[in-house]
Amino acid sequence: MRRAAVAIAAGAMAVSLAACGSAEEAGGDNDSTASAAKGNDIKVGLLLPENQTARYEKFDRPLIEEKIKELTDGKAKIDYNNAKQDANLQAQQVDTMITNKVDVLILDAVDAKAIKNSVQKAVDAGIKVVAYDRLAEGPISAYTSFDNVSVGKTQGEALLKALGDKATKDSKVVMINGSVTDPNAAQFKEGAHSALDGKVTIAKEYDTKEWKPENANSEMEAAISAVGKNNIAGVYSANDGMAGGIITALKAAGISVPVTGQDAELAGVQRIVAGEQYMSVYKPYAPEASAAAEMAVALAQGKSLDSIAKDKVDSGSEKGIPSVLVPVTSLTKDNINDTVIKDGVYTVDEICTGKYKAACDKAGVTG
Image (cartoon, rainbow, N blue to C red; front, side, top):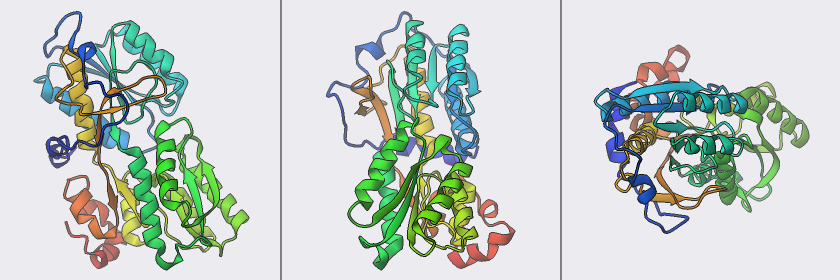
């Protein structure tokens, strides 16, 4: 992973959003006491949810691991596994982490509700749990993610901007949301509706199983059949992977309309350059990963989270969870240079490969 991406963490970590949930102070007595204080010789478990989305293996895992090593002078041991979108497998992986006696667990849940019992088992075994990116239920000690309602609102507002004069109550928009097992998906949807409702008509709406592009493709085909190819003004896609499947269906039907996305995946950025996808949401993974690593190391060492977690959120089962919420940016053709290239996520050469070279030149993508 490029050093530039890691370097943005320190500055971004200083951002503090408005607090929500309980008014208790972050990282109280429960986080500052431990059965025994530990040094840098700790064992950290890291469980990520899937590999359908490029971000987890390309960004999240290496960023988290590098930050943990940095914080512990390279002495920490990291046990890693990916659930490949299988909630049952992830529950087994938690059991393995308990057997391996990790000191703390960073967990990005496949199914935030289904993982609750596993979280409880880990805590009962003396393992603190940091919920990463998705707010798992159960007695978690800390949480880091993005302001997910803001993500959806950013997407919805961008779609309205792309529609311009066509953003009327008579304009029909298709909404293709994420998986119902992901609590983030519900927040993205909430934010998007707050921007779109009353300004356009939501003609068809879907919740996409497992966030799979092929499922989004089928949903878009169904929407085209139901709404009519000449009646769709734009498409809200909750992420870039699904946007790829959606755009394939639109192209096959001869439709060219604005499509949103999220995650700033390389393929998504290339589609934006080419004019096939209107926008994505750029989520700087370095500060999110850095926050998870910092909180995990602090918890494993029996230290307070006061200086790290400035926000608080509520889950379906817990109140006032110490949290770090990272702001996001609407990524369009106009700010590729100032976001993913500037932060070292991608190089110009990676984005502007053969068939995208002319489009990059036209868009001024130069780094």
